[in-house]
Amino acid sequence: MNKLIIRGGIPLSGQVQVSGAKNAVLPILAGALLASGPVIIRNVPHLHDVTTTMELLGQMGVSLTMGEKMSIEVDPTTIKNTFAPYEVVKTMRASILVLGPLLARYGEAEVSLPGGCAIGARPVDMHLSGLAAMGAKINVEQGYIKARVDRLKGARIVMDQVTVTGTENLMMAASLASGTSVIENAAREPEVIDLANFINAMGGRIENAGTDTITIHGVEKLHGCDYTVLPDRIETGTYLVAAAITGGKVLVKYTDPKLLDAVLAKLVEAGALIDIGDDWIELDMEGKKPNSVNIRTAPYPGFPTDMQAQFCALNAIAEGTGSVTETVFENRFMHIQEISRLGANVNLEGNTAIIRGVKNLNGAQVMATDLRASASLILAGLVAKGETVVERIYHIDRGYDHIEEKLAGLGAQIQRVSY
Image (tube, rainbow, N blue to C red; front, side, top):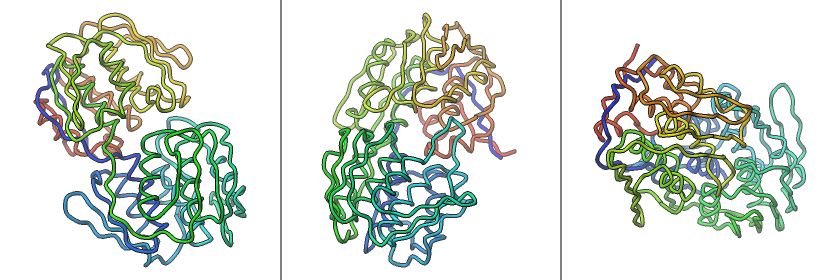
């Protein structure tokens, strides 16, 4: 087991490089199953979830070769089975993303119902009903989804609610279906666009990704390609909040400011000076404390739920009172109890956290409960007086590439300790 030990109170300063997006690389790795030849994926972050996905593909017989400069070659032509076991899938919800590609490419799949962070119910019903609309025969038995089809057929699919993984799974499945599919009420996230661009680089015909109505013209075959994953907007936002919460000045490199409009607007509202270029963002707090901001999460292009916990930490030491309303997941305030151990003044009212900024947080022992909650605790530790110990940091390793090294490069006193 590992934990992070943080001595807070140091304004962060310097430059940090953002890695490839976790929420883009996982569906792209699954999408490589669609290809009839090897695929090279670049800008792959070093994350536990990436390792888990590679383990899952490897168990199916897919050949994986690590290359230079964060690249992976995926050769799906060596696949031996279309089985995704519980032992792997239970640790990561994104494993469900192999269902659509396996069914489209090989006509069958047996995939365990997924696990992942305990932040709320995220049923796969819409994945299954969409695949059934395309002609798949689906049974759920003993915790496994068993699906078969001769060839998927194009269909019009109206999603009951916006779902990123549901949109991605059905988009991948439809790419090799006969005929045209239309997904209505589709997710608009940048990672959905990145997956569509990846499929199109393999010869796919996907139109209007990034809107709420995506059209997929199925093709007979997809070929290999060489593709670079987009930068991680949530990692970018986390380092910007780290600068803001400590009163520092940080330049985030190799990112895409266009993906962070909602987050940047709230940082400006908090009092930060923001400067942007084509692939960088600089935030300067000029040594001041941030002002409290009101947040309401929403599907993209609204404020991302994956940045909610980080802004709870910012509001905890900000001037004034801010409200944070969570509309995407019903159980995503588990970090509140832990951040309160550091002295935060928070009242939960249903799906809203009312946070009154305090003069100081004080170091304590805290426990990460999920991926983004762990990020909020690290941010709080960066500004807290004394020593903060964050346990269960295996959560943070699922989504942040060497976070303690990157923060240390900005001047933070943070170290990973095995125990």
